[in-house]
Image (tube, rainbow, N blue to C red):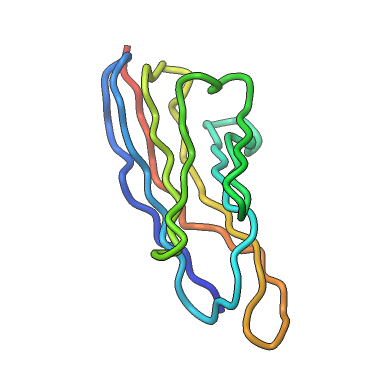
Length: 120
């Protein structure tokens, strides 16, 4: 099993910043893509950003230029630095990690979610 533990959510005023963290643990042989998704009330879960095993990053247009995704391979951790936050960024943020466990089994794990609330 691969477990993900998220932290860093909270309440912030518009224009402020937050940094989310997501640490993976368990029977991990390798980690490929690490990403962040979010889900606002009444909406479907949407992709926010991804970082590959070689550090290539991609962002949703709605967060490009404001959010930065990064990873620390030594700590099996992915981060999401969020700046210039807007009320429409309010959502539960989920991390997602894909890779292989020992024995060659693929995994596709999700964090428990962390609430980000941006007040106007």
